[in-house]
Length: 346
Image 1 (tube, rainbow, N blue to C red):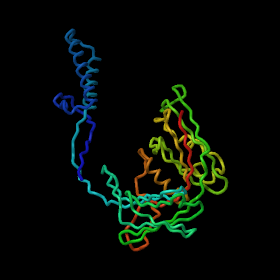
Image 2 (tube, rainbow, N blue to C red):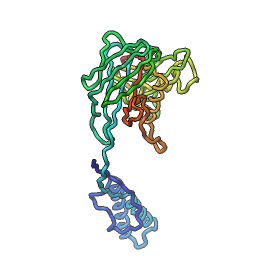
Image 3 (cartoon, helix red, strand yellow):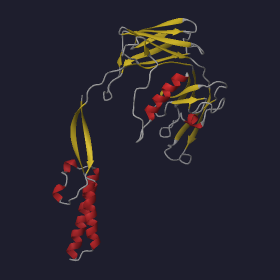
Image 4 (cartoon, rainbow, N blue to C red):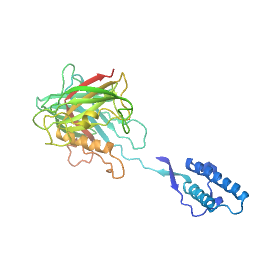
């Protein structure tokens, strides 16, 4: 694969010879600004010199400063071609079984290369079966509409407290994963506040700010995935969030309301809601292994800056039953119980 990269290098000029000035076609905004400054100061110097042979020393100093600034902030651009080999298109699974009635969907895809601007390739020809280990029931998923589906009708595959096993037969090999479906708390309410210029601060914009209210279930440790939707679609202006007993840490609390970062995390300061928007909050229960998976995934999605962690493949719970095989399927098989609440902003 070939791509063109623009590398910009700040020039520290040791000479003030005009012939080293970059051509007009390569001037950037900084160069243009400093060019105007240079001409202005130079003209002023000429005018002053015509009036007196003893121009003030400060005029010469200003002239030199302008020239130094001009050449320091000038830059050149060089287009280079870099050959990047295509990496292996790794197969991965997006499989979530819920306690909701109706159709359940499992996506089996191949990842695209980092610089490819296209949708992941769908993997066909696999046999996918989900088994309720607790009740010894099996559900055969069939390929249609670009995914593997099972329609449970008015019933639900997922039952709280049950353990589920995923079996995949693909490319002559068998893969397996398990997860347990745990309990979930309910969303008590969603409150909304309009913040004008007097009520906003920092990066906050004027608009409607929604807040989610829920309480952790008493007893045991509960792991929760908090997702926010706006007008029927996932709200990408806010982060995916995962909580432990309505907080960040295990054994920190039990039975309390969700802490402020989660309550207020359903609204983006930079993109608050508008009148007429429909806000929906979905709480998803997680097993401990599934929580750990999502916690690592979210950490990689939103980490950045100078000391950010190096991106890597997050561990999968899908293993190849042929122990000596190197073929892998990435992704995750998880089971979740859901509760949700919607509110229209009036």
